[in-house]
Structures are given as C-alpha cells and as structure tokens.
Image (cartoon, rainbow, N blue to C red; front, side, top):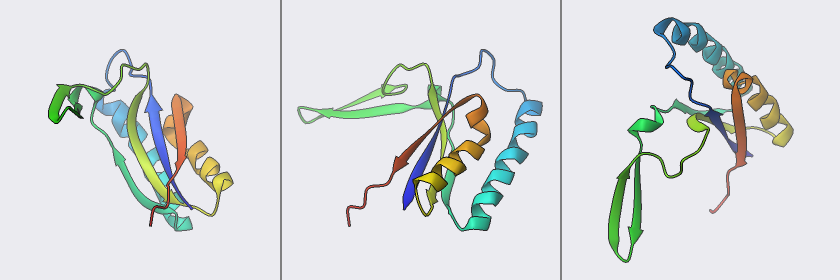
Length: 115
C-alpha cells in the first residue's frame, strides 16, 4: 500500500541557522536509509518556504494566480515522503521516525488507486 507522509511544521520565529540545518540533515538521512533498507522509499522531497508558493485556480474559464499558499494556516507543509509499506501500522511506524514529528505533525494519507 502506498502512503504519502506529509510533514507539517509551525514556522519558527527565525529561520534555522546553517548550523541547525547541518545538525538536522543527518537525522533525515538516517530515516531515509531506514526506509531504503525496508524497500519502502518511493520518493521524498523538502519544500521551499511557504512564502515561495504560488496558487492557481480556474473560475469561469479565467485563470487566477496568487502569491502564497492556498490557505492561511498555523502549520506549513515542509516536505513529504511517498512510501510503499505493507500496511497502515507500518506507515505509522515510519511517520513516527521522521525527525520533524518531534516538533510538528506527520499526516498519513493513503494513495488512491485509480488505475
């Protein structure tokens, strides 16, 4: 079963320093290695800050493009992992190992099979 693990975080008052990023990245590398060892890793990406977002909608045949995210929320989507795990319990185990779970939330969404 494929699951999307969405990493949500509250934006910090100040962006992480290069040293803080350097300290956190090995943790994500270790988590990715853990997924790879199980054959569960399909894809993973970190997203740029929400301030770089562009939202597109179509109303009455007219394209509307706005700067910023779709919704004003307290938490921002910071990245994701797409995994192929045996079941939901395994996806929950994987989500609990994401370093961002310590200070944010991980949303687990099953992928809909439309084919």
